[in-house]
Length: 137
Image 1 (spheres, rainbow, N blue to C red):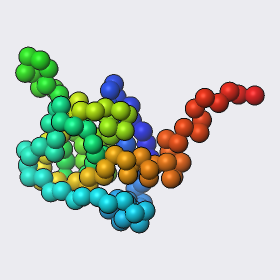
Image 2 (cartoon, rainbow, N blue to C red):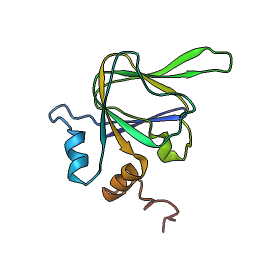
Image 3 (tube, rainbow, N blue to C red):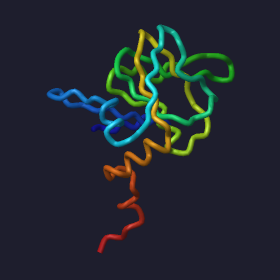
Image 4 (cartoon, one colour):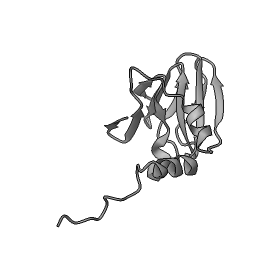
């Protein structure tokens, strides 16, 4: 798994050319209830300033993340495809979405509740805070 850090956005992408990651099967195997949502072209998954309560994973299709400034000018900050997570700002404490996510093509997206995603990451040792606050001896 690679972690890409781009100004105020963090993108996770699972990359392994030899093996396909089946997120739906994985989350089901660890007891996480997810919702599968189909988006049509141009349909919004969420809008800027919506409550940030879920992390999303693209199974197929593509989405764009965009922001609108106070003058109404839109800027596309990312184009995402299969294997990309988005909306993970909620795990960093964001209460509202900082961007709008909309489908560029028909897309299938898994929606994972924030608390379930945090629990799952901690169970596999990611984000557990183990290294935080330790002094080297």
